[in-house]
Image 1 (cartoon, rainbow, N blue to C red):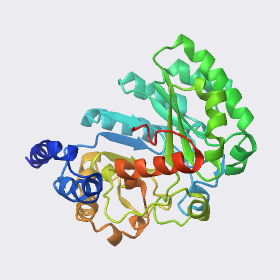
Image 2: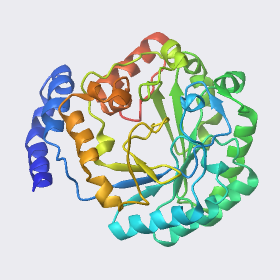
Image 3: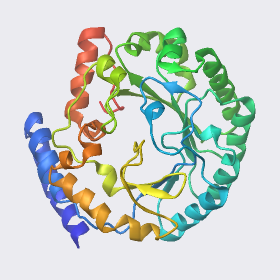
Image 4: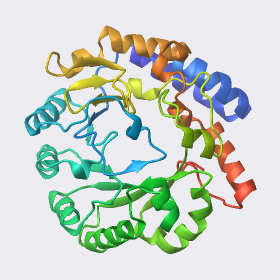
Length: 347
């Protein structure tokens, strides 16, 4: 009933979004009226994301992973397949296989993807592509991957500087091979997420001219704070460092995250495992999803009390959902750098 109430209110409010000034829409209607109607109990998550590993082959300046304090490891194959089967039995729509680690490091990736594919799940992973060798590309194509998302920003030495341990030329060579081989698989998407910083924004024009042909879609996203871990590079090299004074995290209503050891976190960037609400070895997915702890996080978010959650207090991931702020950064990039690009593919 609560879900139907939320849908009804959202439907009734929709016409107002067309005439209310954008500032009021984003500062009042969106964060207060819309989110405040969200239910605390949801039948099931839409997405289950498995942290197959939190090990990474790079030490990127834009990422908080090099500073993480949580244990490092990889998920047992038996646990991964069990969780995929549990998700299937619960009717969860999507399962993904990446969080803060590099999935191509995971030794059982082929087995996990094959198992998920047999159950009918679409397969998507996100990778930095440094390990996207011919062998790994052939494996992903053989298991029937539906979408491969690449994380990359900058070119040549600028890329190598931002993504410590990475090799831009190797990445492009790897992508060219995958791009060529996927021609026999017309339904496979190859997409790119490009993080905009004061350093990488200067490479965008050249990058698009040389390499845009490789991708079906290129998504530009601003450099932001993730969690309350203060990253000096983010602080100093963001074009606009947004503040989150009100925006709740919509992931609390859509997505469940399971770490490599079976802990369930409410957050996709819980580098230090500070937002763990239980473990899949002790409880079912749906019991965890609507546990008192999960509901409390939803309650604090929808009431605008994000600052009461220490790990969320400095996080600006929810701001990415705001057209108002994404338009703002697009306007600044257009004015300061002469670039007309869509932020998060919106406009």
